Length: 367
Length: 199
Ligand SMILES: Nc1ncnc2c1ncn2[C@@H]1O[C@H](COP(=O)(O)OP(=O)(O)OP(=O)(O)O)[C@@H](O)[C@H]1O
Ligand SMILES: [Mg+2]
Ligand SMILES: [Zn+2]
Image (cartoon, each protein chain N blue to C red):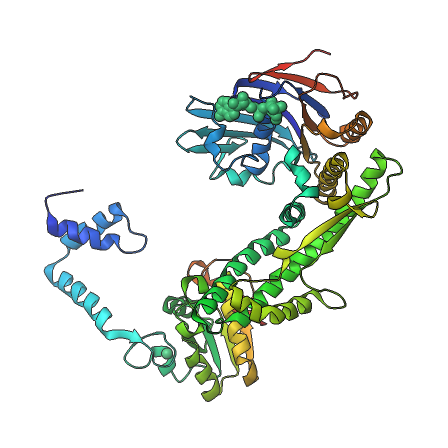
């Protein structure tokens, strides 16, 4: 996928912008708080139909204005062109169309333009709680496999119901009603999620290892390990999950909610055989998170036969010059990427379209 | 809207309580009633009352019945060894309409949903077990809706009836998740029934 152009009206602090992009590298420079991330947010809106910063869409409408308008033109790797238009009124009214055809909801544009975004907070992939890593793997697998996404959605619903049954049992001191059936539902969806994640993990792992080889020769590999809340050794996943549920039943009745299952699992990331979370330096954690995201982009590209757009928000702050340079060169010949930086010195030595943002005005920089 | 016609307004409000009827349709229906002859309106009103008074649930299967037993349970030409379990009485009508199924029914009056406080005890399940035990049933098809709750209920029934050594099956999932029987066409229903799988 390549984005050709982006037009914005009243998007955050950007009053008006008409931008044409390079198919490879787009650098967005500017001092702090000028509108660089706003620009990435606008692009990302066309991928997931929502902001990556806020659930409240209206926040994207420029202060003191009543509406925003955004239009993006892109072409898929197969050569199909899309013109997506989004209008958003402060009162909440939304209009969205693709190639002139109106859609009922913003979420219907999901899937047209796969995107991988890295924001500074994503270092949580290395340092944060297990949920960060689960979300990462689940997101990747969902982009690739609709049935994984389906299982994920069902699992969440089953969990809510099963927990309700346990809570009622706890409060009334009786047996949880129909629990054997809810168990079996957890087993069905849960096992599919665990196996789907393991499969996804090995896909990400092998790609991440090759990427890190390119960036830091001789650093050894990134390895990943699925730490399941259920003891999987020597058993079929379903059987293991079934046994684990039975084994915690009494405890669950006292606590009133489900205590095992994929929603408690974690993923350990190792760099050079040492757990990143514990032993990694700041820069290494950031680099590893970036690499995982790039591995994600790669997996999506190969499995969907569509190159995702890569958005990188201020990723260089903790990388040394040489590492930053290598990350860049890796990107430039694979994806169309958009990269922001508050720095003035040029860390980017590949050919690129360059933009400078100041108080919401986006200007094209001369070489 | 206030028309200064309280009786007319009251009828409009009654119609609006029906599913799928909004203000405009309710007004149209009300004017249609006004256009009816007196005799016809009387018949209509009496039928409304009668439906409520005479129709109850079948003692055996929980479907709608005038009297103790419903038409299907009373029909000796039906296949006695196979039961189709559904969520609501209206589902029986949908399946009867498709003309595909010649066995008998069992209406659960709901599905398992702890969130809504519905457990097995709140459903017509004990009676189902009694029927399986007493009536020489060979197969139970669980045609609850393909939702999380419908699926779980079918599992529960399969687990419950496991000890009787009968076949417990579920129509194949040709239906999109969450779609209720009501909105599915005949062809799809018969295909789903033909291709049922053991739970
Ligand atoms: N709805 C809005 N209307 C107008 N201005 C807004 C709106 N939302 C945010 N802003 C402004 O946008 C600016 C922040 O833009 P952005 O987050 O893109 O900064 P940035 O260039 O990425 O800066 P940094 O380098 O610090 O990350 C702030 O000045 C903020 O006040
Ligand atoms: Mg920023
Ligand atoms: Zn009956």
